[in-house]
Each structure stands twice: as C-alpha cells, then as structure tokens.
Length: 246
Image (tube, rainbow, N blue to C red):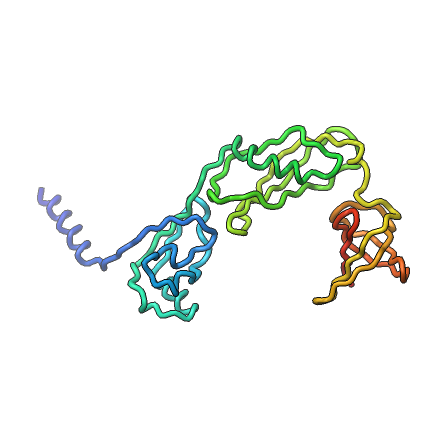
C-alpha cells in the first residue's frame, strides 16, 4: 500500500510540475492549411495566412504555437492579435475508396483519353486508396501503343487531383482492343500542319510539312512551306505542332 501511495504521489507531483499544454484539434479537407481553417475565431484579416501543406488524407500533423507565430510574422501579421494554444493537431478528411469505386470513377476518363482506334475491353485497379473526399480526375496518360491491330495490355496513369494539386498518380491496368486506325500515326509523313513558334510573349505560326510520321507528343522535323527551313516541333494534334529548341 505504501508503494502504491508513493507512486500516486509521484505522479501527482509530476503533473503539478509539468507546464500547462493545451492542444486543439481541427479537421480539414483542403490541400493547404489556412489559419482560418484551424482558428475560425481569428480576425478575418489573417484567415488566409498559409500554414503549410495539409497532411495526407486520414493522417494528422501537429502545428506548434511557434510555427503559427512564425508564419504570421512572415505574412506581415502580429501574433499578438491571437490567443494561440500550445499546439493544434490538424487531421485531413479522408474517404476510403474501394477498388470497385475507383474503377467506376476512372473508367469514363480512361475511355475519353484513349487514342483513336483503341477501345477499352477491361480495366482493373489494383487496390483501394484513402483520398480526399474532394478528389477529382485529372490527366490520364498511356504509354506508346504499338502500330498494329488486336488485343494489347498496358497501364494507364490517372492523376487524382484535390484543390488543383495532384494527390495520387493511380496506376490502372487496361486491356485495349486496337482497331485499324490504331495502326496509323496521328500525323503521316507529308501532312501539313500549323507550326506554332513562341519567343517570349510573341507567338507566330507558319505552315509546315511533316518529314516523318508521328503521334501526339512526338518531336519530328517539319519543313516550313514558305522558307523551306527545317524545324523540330512537338505534335499537339492532327493539325498543330509546337516548335521546340528555337
């Protein structure tokens, strides 16, 4: 009994001796932490002060009083305007997306991004993810497809975006049915396109003739129709290419 009493007394003394530490907790669903998100009672003038990147969905980050004061001073505001707790734990909202939910979410975007002549036969996401509830589909990219007809398996990369920032690059296994058009290049040798030339703020265009075939994203040589000068340009569509390295 004496040992137990001594233990309780020691614990009480430690509590009395420890400095007071008040901690608040806030939940957010944005990619960046704004002061107004964690201290809504703060004056409106400081609500947009950026306190840094939000933790990954479902995770938390501890903001100390010193960190908040430093960010306020860097933003030209006085920390004396606020009554700050010793720390604030910031937790990012998360939604757990199952494999089936993700497949339903990304399939329309994958189909829209398919190269001409390609049809989606199967699509598979390998695992579920915890993501921001505000996640949206961003860019979908494929590797270079073969110039042939038939079935072809590859991986599409799907960007999931929250508040304009890419939160996850999701690999999606796809099986494609490549038709006759898939065996043709987007731009055939001898095709005429608008060559776009940018120099600083200036933007001019000229008609160029492709000296070789290529697909969107490929850099090939073009002969300018009027001057016969040869320029290298990246194919952007069947009708446009952007000059590079000039």
